[in-house]
Image 1 (cartoon, rainbow, N blue to C red):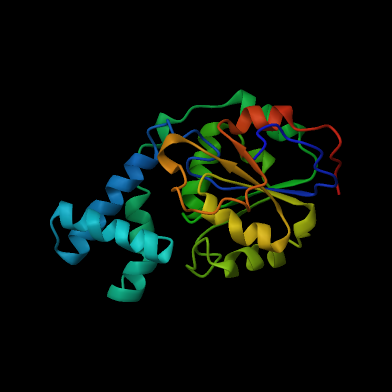
Image 2: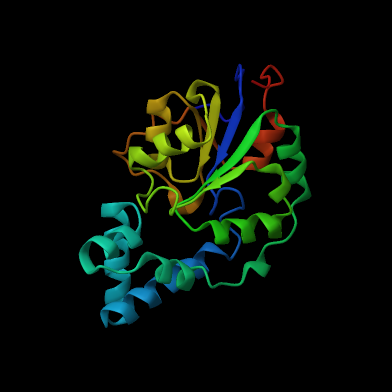
Length: 228
């Protein structure tokens, strides 16, 4: 798949995943969340940290998020979970002037679509100095706690914000989360990093573009696209 953006045509909406996409995976932010999830599972289910980690990852792969597995199998209250796992040090992020400039250059609206909470997304965007560039945040509550890559949240996002999928571009660090977007007709960009490489038999044909650097990709985006 090409790394350099080609002609994108008419683009009206730019949809960004949050964690490990809007900020680089090298930032010490998501590892904090990962550790908090493990601690929550251990405390809620009275497990050792090692057993909690195993269950955490089993639920993540089976259901899309650990939270979904906890809700379905253990009747865990989602808001308590979200408050706990996002109680982290967001100060590890700092204002990103390159990202802000790249977002400002894009025509049309920008959205954040995250399996996390809106509160967490706001804190991240504020720390990065890019909040003003986004028209909306579609979080896990907005999707009725149905996570990506389930198709329903994508359809709900499109409906809520009157997005025309054929005029939208979606960015994700998890390639399987781009499949429903591609099925709707969106242009997809996989932001790849060492921790999210596809397995040897995994299909990534739904990823129109693949990049290791979101900001560089945005800066190099072809000038032929235009606002809707």
